[in-house]
Length: 372
Image (cartoon, rainbow, N blue to C red):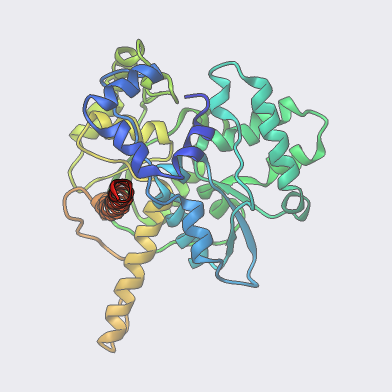
């Protein structure tokens, strides 16, 4: 698990093949055994297209507008790219030109758990070297995974105490909620009138705090509750590991998981941490949304509402959008994710079938020639 950055990059070459081994019964049990994972845990599915692949094919927009750099962490990049896409939608709607790093980078967080501080430090040095132009230009950098943002805001300057670029990067790094609240005067997102329960990531609560989330959710018009839930229990790779499963579940069952199960089916479940969302996904019938996805919901629903009003040649009565969500509002995202996976599996099956047919044809041709 500590080497997930490199494993994920390899998996992104042929994610459907990797998923075949990690998701197929019997085969997945062997993979868990080899990886030291608890048999009760599900292995996350690699996305058919990473966020950075999607972004580079799509291209930059809002050219000439103020620049922001979106940090594509390993987990959202390779497993849940829809979170990155949501952030792009929201930032562009706010008038920014979104960019991503030119090369693949990692903050090194997963290495810490396994004592590989030297490797983590080398990755951070690579980050500082690669992002030096953006750091020196003062371009805001927005992270989506709280544990990654915490590295840049805390551990990095401890590892490089005399490095001025490390200090500048620390001061330029924001969660998306922090960016909108501290860097934009008077930011007012579209209203999204619904209930929500919020779980704060441990690193976020310890380093960045939750005040900006409170402000953003209030501006959205959410009737929200921030759970006094402590740790979700997954704690990065801890809850995935064999021998830690029951402890992980016991922690989750203290507050978080019962609260999610009690929530109305129309209530938004919000959690920014990848491991927190995985704990919720694997232990309940709900999936948590990232703050970026909640903001995307507000932006897109508001745009849809204005389009409908314009089509009727009427003026909107209010900027407030009250949504009557169907049960499980996260399905807006999960159903699209499943459609993408099905399309990718079909394409992979077609390619494999074509390759097998070609190999069979070549074999038959060679055999026939051998008989002549």
